[in-house]
Length: 477
Ligand code: FAD
Ligand code: NAI
Picture 1 (cartoon, rainbow, N blue to C red):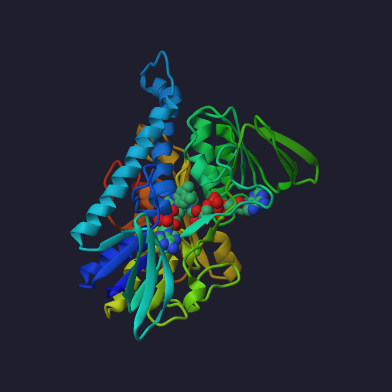
Picture 2: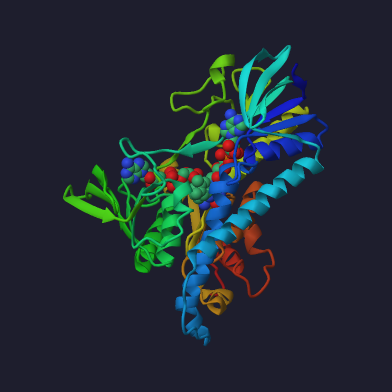
């Protein structure tokens, strides 16, 4: 006998749990199934983001930034520390506590919104749009069957490994192992200088590891604005991250005490790198394992992503998919927006997600954040634009903070002045970018931002100054 719901959500990452809550708010009877287990085998909703992604990485970035400030920046403020040390197990315990608070928060939200939570793996076992989709939950205490006319698949993504170099999470680490080390490795190699490589590389470098990144692409951070990427490479290199671009791994060998990599550099010269630990962060792949997609004929593309239309409909009526398991950027907030929109569509509303205003953030020091088009994209598309920029060096709050690296750059249409892209590298870029996203969502012009009163002294004045710069009239530069 199956328990009937209006909606079954498979996965309680940011895509799934947010969709479940929104659907429940709209009056649907919702089940949400999630397989993630905590160390004790209990439920740990929140997905990759909460358990081994956004949240724990930001916890470690914060701890390691405090350590770096205490070691290098405090003395400028007249604060002396005679003996500085890092207790990595305590740092990890704090991280685990932050993760646990988030897991428990989601369980509380499910209760509050009357979402029925099932801990286990959910698989399609049959059904159709007419009689409802049958989903079996295999949990600790056996199996139970659920049925609903609507299903949202939000099963997320998993790390991609390199051929012949499986993750053992001891020497060869995915994001999981990279976040869990309880000793700072002396030497750390990272394959892939993307978002995870740079964030994790920053954490362990700040704590004392000698970090080398091998990146296959000839360009650094190719998705970012080229001027931002250039500044980032300069800053990261200055901090001590060794970054090799155009690197090709030719052989890998696991030894008792480390990993040896043979690789060729951008000039084709053979090189060898021996490291205590190796993080492989070369992207992630959609996760449809155990989903039973074949049982109902749910279509995936050649790369394994569930095929969806612009509104997240799959090939099966009543079955939707959101988040990392479908096309588009693998970002928690993109997953959430899709989850909300699908819940509202199921409830008969007509929501819209604007993928052009999804912000990107890299939580390094300096932070990097952007929304909209890069300058190189505008050039390639032939769109006429004007640019304005403002360095944090000229911002009073940044000087007071002692963090004047980087700049804000605004790109606007040459004739209409509509903001087309904003690119920030510098302090609190992750927070500052929200103003740019709001402005773009409301189709603001650069003059709109330039005429808005920004509090003084704040970092946000740099955004206003960059907007003034589009018209060639910055006031503080
Ligand atoms: P997931 O979060 O992957 O959740 C999917 C859930 O479904 C999991 O709990 C999984 O166990 C469960 N599941 C899978 N199959 C089944 C099944 N058959 N039955 C039941 N349950 C199932 N993004 C940001 O926006 N900002 C960041 O700062 C950021 N930092 C990151 C740092 C790291 C190290 C990593 C790895 C990722 C980071 N991301 C970040 C990306 C972000 O984590 C993902 O984009 C986001 O988690 C995707 O959400 P999702 O709901 O699609 O999937
Ligand atoms: P990524 O796509 O950001 O970076 C992977 C890098 O590896 C790329 O630069 C790629 O060129 C390189 N690469 C691929 N194959 C290689 C090879 N064989 N040798 C050397 N380099 C190789 O992916 P990453 O860092 O694994 O992160 C996965 C996803 O998780 C990101 O795309 C992002 O969506 C999400 N994420 C988001 C964060 C944020 O929003 N702050 C933080 C961390 C992850």
